[in-house]
Length: 68
Image (cartoon, rainbow, N blue to C red; front, side, top):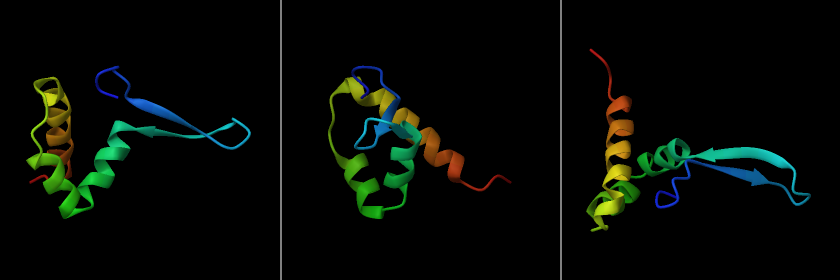
């Protein structure tokens, strides 16, 4: 998704009717629910072109922290 600058995916039913949209934020939300997924996502060594994705994921995770 990142290499093609895609931030949203349309979800279609069996009749090709739109039933929803999956966003990058939805994916980050699911990753953040699992300690294992977070560890896997952060510990992998990805090419430098994915740094932007890591930065957006980090921003997402910081947004989850309580504001004081």
